[in-house]
Image (cartoon, rainbow, N blue to C red; front, side):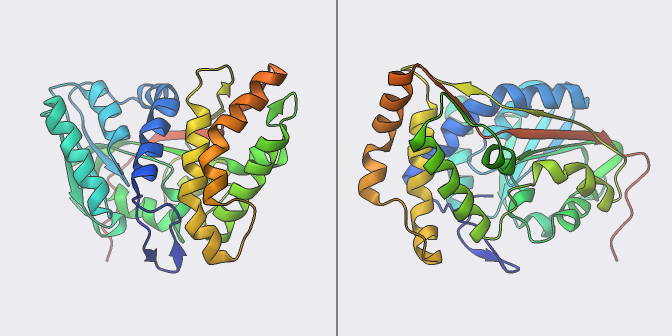
Length: 288
């Protein structure tokens, strides 16, 4: 999702600023390989009709569109009108005819047995009742359809080693971002809970894996990604009364982090992700 509005008591923290839309574009590049591996291993194939929940600016929709090909189709849904318009504009500019987008709350969307697969990335962590949301979207799957969810596992980075050699600035960033995300009501452990969420949503036991990129060197896009992330989170941090970073800090953060990593010839562990996927065994039950 890419909205800054509240939803059932949860508060999404990143908004729709130009910096945030740029962050989403970089995020798409950073996590595209992991996303495509998950889709292919989940059994998404050419010709399928796919629903992408919380599509944002459309990176996941575009990625899965390359898997299903021209014979397939993708519908991305998101509550954020600006993000959806950005996704539509990109698709128009690229001449993509097998991808469409719509503004919709995830748990209000329903198209009975109309999709072969439902996918989502970094969505369930922002839901107050992620199992309920997952169960609601599965209603739009045909029997035997594919469910593939990819979620951040921020807690694994917070509690484990995240830079080699240790980067004091990155450590400060990791702790600050984790505090902001948790304070907004999002789940730092979402990736680690995916198997439980599938079960609570009435789905079969999924296959799952954890992976993370190692970033370093002068040309890594991760420094810019981190700087945009911090800037996007500043309003939420202020709302929570958290200190730590300012707009002035964000202006120099990309350069400072790059310089620190290059000086130590080090590596940063990017936020880990868990991919979980399964097929429904029977036609999903219709909600009352």
